[in-house]
Each structure stands twice: as structure tokens, then as C-alpha cells.
Image 1 (cartoon, helix red, strand yellow):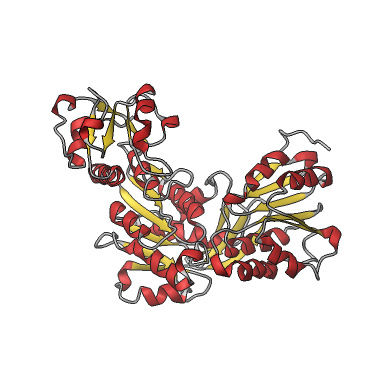
Image 2 (cartoon, helix red, strand yellow):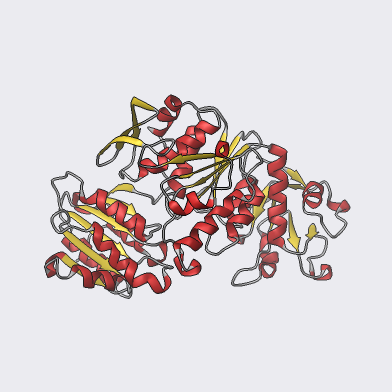
Length: 465
């Protein structure tokens, strides 16, 4: 367990008050949610829907050993260790940056419209061949989650893999400047959050912010067949660029890809004789693997060792996970996140599965597409073939646009639509219509709540009619 003295933290964040009487208080971590507060942690009163300062008494009851504080000092709890700061969030980031410099691990920062989490999991697995590693857990990839990830890093960590997410310009810059990566990875430029950026060009500009904190000799790994990134990396020294893609124009590219139900096998240009196995569905995951391989190569991991680690890497929960479903069905759960690009990619691979049972796709709304929502939802049609999918089940307001596109292709009994207010009806329909050996893909943005549908279709839930 990592341990700080109150004085150490106060110095790291340039405290505005004298903490000498509490200087020897020991802090074992941080918490901004009182529901997750544990004895010995420092409480972070961050501002969200409510001001975190309002929860200080609850934090103390749960065993908080101290807290950041940005209100007037006289409003702080009496005789309770307080570090006075201008902004608790910025103080959290300063604390994390100070700790990161003290531990001094190799740092890999990963961003991109899709594939961040998978690439993070692959990269961490590869680096574990040589280093004691730590990585972002779940979706802790924003201005709060990234510093929390760093503070949770064991002191023995030699390499840390940090996922960097965004929803507006400037956010990646903050994360990169904090982390100062040795290797920065951009997985791809898609349409995720296009509502806030206006165009793919705007998204590319924001993703390129990851080079802001890149160390002087740091390396950027990116898809070399993405013109928007080729254009934006023109000023970067060639020695600091490594590219992956689908053609021989890139540093690494696949030669052959064999897709299975629960694994993907490919060969690549660097070692044509080597079969590299990924324990996941999805030919598109080969590109994520190539990015991870380049990150590992940059930090001294030979391809053979990387291949061994990739064969056994574990995906973060709710990403392309196969689950046992009711009535002997098979669920492919990918309901944590979605973009038009990722939805089309997984649909293509799912549709091409060589299975004996029915293939059914449950697709929920893709969020944060703004004025382009209808157009981009309609574009999912490109990945849907009546010859390869037995049924398409759509859920949510935005999916009405795709329903309109698919109606001429599918008879009514093979195309179902449920409004966002009809989740229970959707669950009921799936329960009564599922047959043994059905293969059911569930894909949507997190906000649609289709993870609840997944839970109801797992074998631990009884069927009701």
C-alpha cells in the first residue's frame, strides 16, 4: 500500500495553510466519493452536480484522514487535517504529477476515437513481459480518473499505461502534460463525441494534443493510413514516429487474418512466420494489437514475447465479452461504448461468424453525434446484410433512422424496434423469443442502459413470460 505523510502532500500541491501540526498524519490514498471512502484516505471535495465540500462530515464518519479544502478555512471542520488549495481538482492533478515523478515509471498514454481500452489492455499485457505494470482501470480516463490511476500505482511500478479520454478540446492536453508519456498512441480518428468537435478534423486536432506532454525523445504511434494524422504529424521528427495500418506503406501491417468466434489469428510483416493470437473476436482488433506491439517495441519488448502476452491478455469488462445466455444462447456483450465506426466493425465480424444458430443483433443508440446523428446512424446499414443476420433489434430514439433504412431489406418479423421508454418490453421480447444456440450481439453507447438488458439475458436470470 502506498503511503504519504500529510506534509508530503501539502508540499506537492503548494498548500496555502500551515499543516505542521498534522505533518505526520499518514494518507493511504484518495477518494472523491464518500461511498468509496476508506479509513486513511484523503477526501477530495470535487465539484459536480453538488459541491463535494457538502459531504465532508460523511467523509469523516467513513474514516477520512484529511481533506483538500478550497472554502474559507474557518468553514473547515475543527481539529481535522486540512490542506488549503485554490482548486481541489488541480491539487489532485499536482499530487499525482509529483508522485509520478518520484516513482518515475515508463509512461504510455493512449487515446483515440475507438479502441483505447482494448489497446490499453493489450499494451499493459505486452509490457508485463519485462516490467512491473499498472494501468487505467475501467474508464478512469479523464481529468479525475487519470490522476486517481496514478495515485493508485504501487511504488514498485516500472511501466504505467494510461488511457486518455475526452469530450471537449483541451482535455487531452491536460492529461498529456500531467503524464508526460514516453510513448503516445492514437488508435484512430472516428466520430465519437463529434457533437462537441463539429468534424473529424476537429477530433484529430484534439487527439493530437497527446503530443503536448510527450517527452523530448518520446515516440508517437499512430495509424499511418489516416490522412488527418499524417498531415498533423508532418513536423515531428521521423525518428519519433511509428505507424501501423493495413498496407506496406506503414511500419507494421497484417499479412493474413483468420477470424474465429472467440479468437483472431494474424501474421504481420515483421515476422511472417509467426502466428499472433488474440483471444477476442474482431478483425479490427488487429490494428489495436499492432499499435500495442509498436508501443512495446519502443520500450524494449521483442515481438516474440509480445505475441506470447497477447495470446492471454484480458479485456476490460463489458468489452466484447462472451457470456452464457438464457436457454443455451450465447451473448456477445459490447454495450459499454459505441461509435458508428465501432458498431459497423463489430457488426461485420459478428455477421461473418460461421455458426449453426441464429445471429441476432441488438443495437442501441449511439450518443453524442449532434446534428450528424441521423446520418451516422443510417450509415450503420453498410455493415448489415439480410443474408448474414437473422434478426436486427433496434432500441432508442436515434435508431429510428436506421430502422427506416433497413425496413426495405428485412421483413417485419426480422426487424424489431423499441423506443427508449420500452426497455422492459425489449427485455420481455428477447426472453420469450430467444432459442437454444442463438448468438446475440448487444452493442450501444453506455447511456442507453443496454447493459441491463445483457444482465437480464444471462443464465443467472430466470425467464418470465
